[in-house]
Length: 66
Image (cartoon, rainbow, N blue to C red; front, top):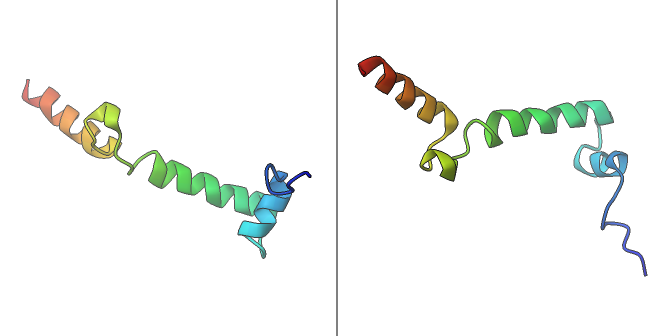
């Protein structure tokens, strides 16, 4: 038996998450969340478990002091 929720198409997924939005508005909202929170504020192990903004600030202050 095929599960309809295993890989729903994007329009169906957006209609579940954002019932009163157009797919383009829902996609913009999700992209904004990923860009602002997930990529900028989330701590990264590669950066010593610092958020990218904090890492950049520390890096620039170290470069200015050197």
